[in-house]
Length: 396
Image (cartoon, rainbow, N blue to C red; front, side):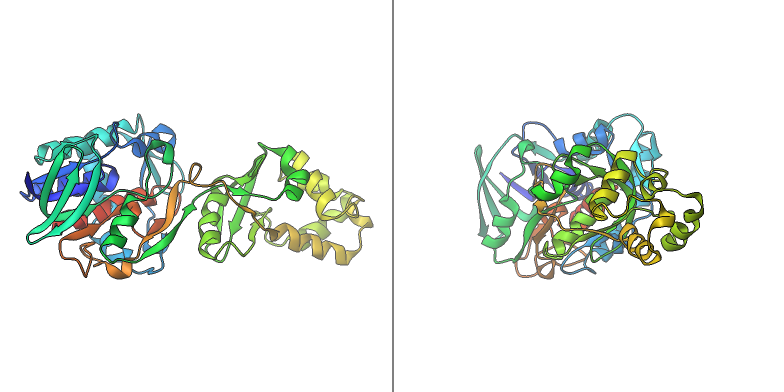
């Protein structure tokens, strides 16, 4: 069986690419090893799929080659995907920070993409395992468990390593290496952070407490919620900072601003001295009461429990600096099972930024999460799937 295009991976990027190529009149075969279509879309966004972000910019993505994503994101924008969603009559809403969700169910996005593929004449082969890929004089031979398939263009949309229980594998990385492309070592990203036993002994019993914060690690600062867990830290602010912590080599601390609304923390503390407040009582207006008291006990080693007026003025400066920049050294992450996406992947320096084609292997394309482009939390990674998939679909 011969096709113009074979796409391996029927997730977000793969379906977008297949539909785009099919619309151009190309004969397309879409292969996936999973029994259920696009499970990662289905479970995303609490079942409502945060399908894009209105505020997206190229600066919202991490990569060893940070400018690579610009072309694809400018050629197929969030507005293009929003128009597709509206054309299919899918109701949606903006939650926070530009994040767009389906009003009803993530299945609407899956059904929309499948319908686009069907209208474009895409052939489906799933569940089906790919056992080998080889070059031919006219393109590629893809051996599968139901027989060989041939194509002129081969698109790899096999995703990263996140959520292995729904079928994530390193297939795409191995295929890239087979054809001589470099792979940036993958790591879990947008992932909760694990803390060491000593830290957990102090704060682990407060699992479930959350608070407004700003978290950062050698990158942008993210103001969102931080959540204490029995294994460490989570919440949107921590997930965002975790990607930069991983990119920095997991050697630097994550720094948390516990008082994002208080710009001059030292002045604020001095102003509260007249009321004979204790530090813990004052912090309880901004932080969970039990966490506030525990933080004071641990960080002050028992010396910060007196009324503020009784503390040395120099101590208030130390307290203010700690509150506005509480350093946390993670012991690791909770791994791919808890990660939203994979950091790293096929090195973009070997790909064409306009088409996603491998420069040294004509006809071979890599798109979506398998590529070393990782977005922020909040619809950015789906938009990368749509944009990269569309670009490859225009060229394959």
